[in-house]
Length: 315
Image 1 (cartoon, helix red, strand yellow):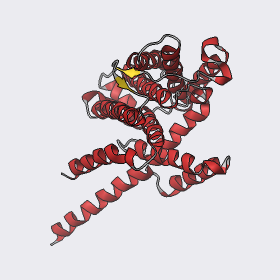
Image 2 (cartoon, one colour):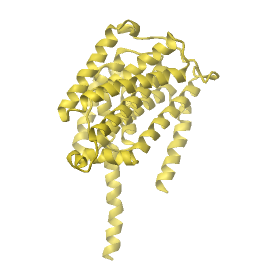
Image 3 (cartoon, helix red, strand yellow):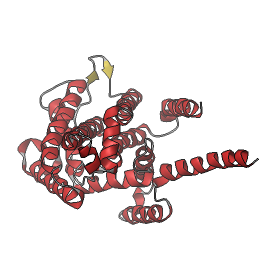
Image 4 (cartoon, helix red, strand yellow):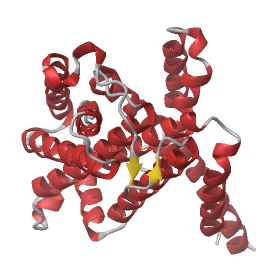
């Protein structure tokens, strides 16, 4: 009952939020929340730390922007094209990277991501350092005007909810249970007959596709695809969001993404000091909130639930 009430409250808050907060800020936070959730699927539930997820966010942004501005495709097809491109890129990256574990896996993903960055810098259709600018938003399904900020917000919200539900269903399915088994003890999962490399590759591709969907949606919001989307700093930011919110939790990455975006938005006038503030918050959270904000809150709730049970048993 508590979960149902909380979910209904969150839905109501999300629906009325654009009437109280700047819609573009909310849409940016939702895009990064989906990106963080997709990353958390790989790190929190498979135990694979990727330093190259910016490649999927950025490649989808470029493909979506090029499809809409140059090819003239509608928004729904452009987003599908960007998501598909990110999934294909994830298939190639994953096929190479899952052969290694730990720091070697992280370094391989970082190296491959840097290759995508330099490709985006040199390729003629990406616009180089200028990126793809003035991308038209167009009409969704031919009649829904996405140039209206309120309409665009609800579309972005729908995309986030769809991606979040895909992740939620995945981690609560038999496939998700195998992923958790691989995270806890991969040799034992292999001894039980599971082809762990195939499961890890499928999780990697799904994470890449959802990251691409976040990048494609972000392109519509800002009407821009730039090198910032494929830079390694973006890969570091998504790690920060996930760890701050709570790795391996459903709502943790969402909280972490909103926290980081809020800091960047409201402290933008401080310039480079924002990075220092982010670093300080990260250090404090690592020292005091080892499980992340949501993880610590869940652990505290479990302790409070156990105390009345113990008291009842004693009495």
